[in-house]
Amino acid sequence: LKKDYPYDFEMLDNILELIVETVCTKRPLNRIGAEERPAEIVRSRFMKLNVEHIRYVMDCFKENTTKIRNIRQYMLTTIYNAPTTIDTYYDALVRHDMSHGYLEGGTGMNRPQKVRPRI
Image (cartoon, rainbow, N blue to C red; front, side):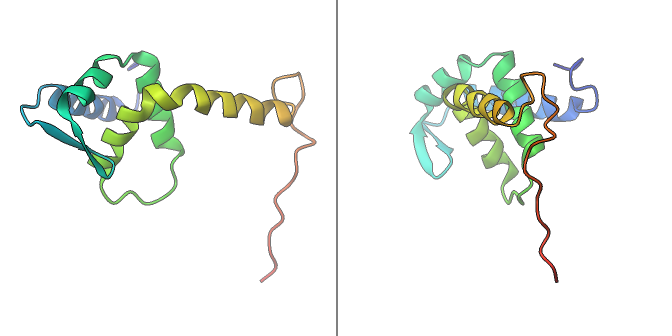
């Protein structure tokens, strides 16, 4: 991953540290999103993570344009949800690209243009 993200070593290290901290916690519950979840369930889900899940988390983070108030909770929730949302995310991305001609040799030239409102 550090080869794929040469300018994001610190972020990758932070993700790893967050995963290790969560897996090694002695607390009985972990807050993921707005819910308290049993630590054993969170630990189990985190232990199933692979390189593609982390790549997905990195891509989601880079695509986010909204202000994140609690970065730790955002990252924990994204990491926790990665195994259950990754397939749907990439399926939607492929469908979007296909509808705009990106995957079938098209240039995407026929895609609708955004219209700027007059002020």
